[in-house]
Image 1: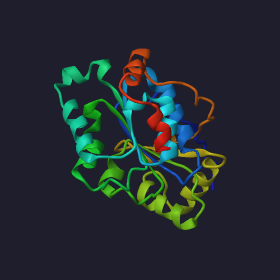
Image 2 (image 1 turned 180 degrees about the horizontal axis):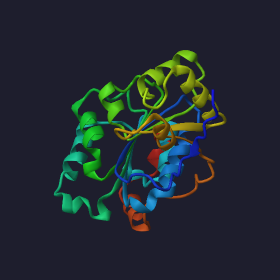
Image 3 (image 1 turned 60 degrees about the vertical axis):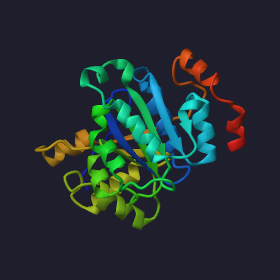
Length: 252
């Protein structure tokens, strides 16, 4: 196979209103990536909302985000209310104060990705000024309609050959990789030592060579930013005044 140059992803220049699917088994590097993604772009987003069903992950998120914005159980009705509030005139949503980080991490025990809520988030999320990050360990948890609507797919190291084939067949279009062999070789090289492959949704009418160059990247988080805090001090004070942070320890 001819040598292919894959560039490192510039994590500081993301599409502000975008949808990310992040896939990987436990301890593959997903948390490092999410931390970097939010850290380098936090100045764009004054508000946030996080859902996770994993106790240890809940605690980690509460150490970064104001705890009142982090939820230990996904409730679709509550999330629908969030989206309903964001369905305002475009002139209001374009104001920088409305941009929101929205994280859904390992919530599939309480959620159905086939629901109209997720279809709305993936297909119309850019109109709500959301940076939507959906994290999962199972490559096939998302139906085709969501996979094709995501702006970015971030894939960490899966060792099983069967898992890699699922990734190729469901996330790596032939517009990017002409066959499984080509995908597998690039994927294996990009996902060592907690690195990941990032696939950006290809533009239409672009040849394969240009598509691979502009839509496939690698990234490795360094895990050094765990002590930083999201949001202004006023937001954190507002959270502290309304939630007993000892409950975080009780849950964990």
